[in-house]
Length: 534
Image (cartoon, rainbow, N blue to C red; front, top):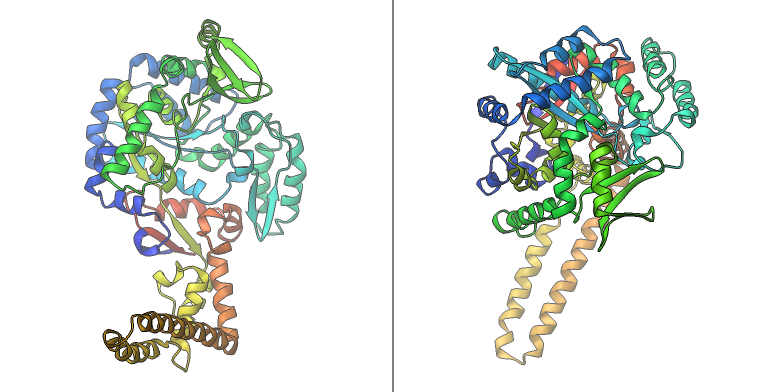
């Protein structure tokens, strides 16, 4: 594989907030702990050691061993489970929803970034151990965000009525969608591996959580990745004091709101929060669904379930059944950092953005805020596509332009006539400057007439320029079509490839070396966008 890089800023596809974070802009520094690099990891290790109890580690190891008890883990996983019992072992974590067949490519990139960072940390600090962890968002309820994936211009979709935590969904009504997917796999030599993945996960698992666990384990277990199901009673018990405080004092609402206001004051007054806190940032899980908790005059109620509890009753339930309480996006990061000996969290741009809202809430509870590392982003393409790019004289920055902007730019470059009518506007302004000089010598109404006529004629030139470009596109329609088709292959729906395509499309072409090659070519500490040719 051949790789190239382009800065995220030069792609024009990432938010200003993320670009500012990557250059460590001073006005953002108060909203996170330390910037993620190898040197700052040492500080985080000492901080975590001081705040992560021996009892929490015992509970975590017990929970993980219980998860893997019904499986036959890879040797690397068994080794890492044993290492987690040691006080000098830390985790690097990424989390994601239970997307069908891993969903878009960036699911894969998040996990690879996590695995690769652990390798780099081990080289830097050989006396410590670093374990990659994938946190399954099994309690999420946004089924529409996970129930489909794109494969070769087809949308493979799981259709069902959804209610409650997605991890608990049975898979009987998923099998038809899997049959359609298998039918479209074709006769590639690698098809047998994909079918084996399906057979050992979605075909045999009891629910979506178990299926995702087994799928990810098959793909990354050999690299020692630990898959964590956080919806467990023993783990929720570690978090129950914070759940009780949230119910009593609406603590996270106050802390996060304060931080949002500080971001607006000290970083950007036009800042829009990635997520907004609620008075109570918890859900309550029942077999019928996942319900938001609301405080009432006499205690608590479940929105949408018409269930009410007195304060004393609700706290008794919390003590006996902590697994029924589910943190939302505001509290989930805190839950993660309480139960894991974690150093880094690896996420996408949107995730980093909402983590930057949370530090004050961590400080309130004395929980170390992790180092936030932006996951790797990549564009994968074949040698055949690269040759087409070369023939069209496309630069790296050209590729990331929106399709219409790119087509317009290239048509202007290859056109035999000048499509820029700016010179006419300059001549027009010179002519109207003379008329403007007469304004002081006559009635004021003349000034309005001059201004209106200038705007009208300028708009006329703009219109003619657009029509000229359109006419030239028709003349050069072959070039337009080739350019549009190429860009569509690289950026489906004019979006980043990693946000639309599933890994299977590339696995069928690249084969079993796909994931090892990505692990070799992606560097978690290089924040540039990576372009990979196979």
